[in-house]
Length: 490
Image 1 (tube, rainbow, N blue to C red):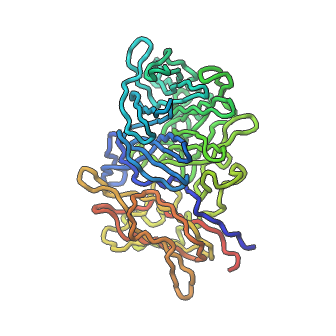
Image 2 (tube, rainbow, N blue to C red):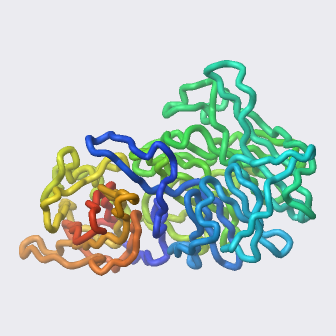
Image 3 (cartoon, rainbow, N blue to C red):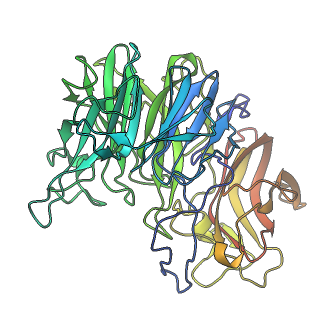
């Protein structure tokens, strides 16, 4: 049968297509895994999102903010201050916007994009300053304001790290002031396998319970948190809920984790938020584990969330790594929000050919469903390309590139920036006829995650050609994917 036409213009593909990914700011910067020193890296993580007036406002660690009006494409608008280090959060409150971040005080602005003015540290009832870790601000339906966050308890055993979640109401007239001491809402529980620290969740006595977020939906309070280790594939988001109030009566969901991904290209789905979007939908924005150049090297993803018959949060389609329709496009995204387009060149070792490669960075590493490996062309290759045979005719209509900037060094003036490239498809095997699917030779956008759609083209091979990069940068390709469907007429 023939496949129906798929309109991919209102789609996205994880990791999110965020321009101007900021520089990671975590010491030590130098980690030498490959024989070459990795001086600098880029990272974006721990997103909080405000949905207001038909726009997403996304505030991640290391820099902010990013804005989307169509929920698919993002624009970077620098705020003042710009780098709040970890976990910034912004909420509207009494006609203004409050902002705080990890181990920081409270800021205020008349706009969700600032400028944000510093009001001072939070203040405990005894008058001492208080700087919350991984703070989440929440405004209830009655206008009362709350603060949630992570705390590290007293360590009584050498190899046991007690962590937990607190909440507290803030003074409506001076939101810096806590109306009580922070209230412990729950602690790490080793019986919850997803809370245990480690790639295989092996530490039954310790876990890093962080990234708190409060969502209220249908009268129920959902206290969402992340665990357990941002560098691991086991990173995830889970939830407690309460029908009694924002500071009491919390029960652990039976359906936990809410969202996770332990295998494939997109791994980890931790520290982030769940927010309401268009057409009464819920969306998770989460941190993707990368952790190649640094433990805290990360990216951001987004996926649909829903509420099941038990009133619990769940991800109907899990963590996705193929093109999905953007928020508000599908009338019933819970039933199906995917385009149906499939990745066509994953793990095509035998059918791929690169014009060159640096030692240990063969072309196959752009196709192996891992962000820990990458194809790196030889330094003396003037126009490197990677060709992959699809082994049959396919209607190709989307492509995703994930780049690694080799040689990046901010101190030496080797900055990241736009990478120019083309993606072509061979439409006639006999005549070796190639057509351009994506032309980014004049690219002016700095996107290390670059997803694009185009009108369907039936082809049996695809070719990526790298045409240029910023001075001093060698473009490595962590992932080259094309998406489509079998052309059943051929």
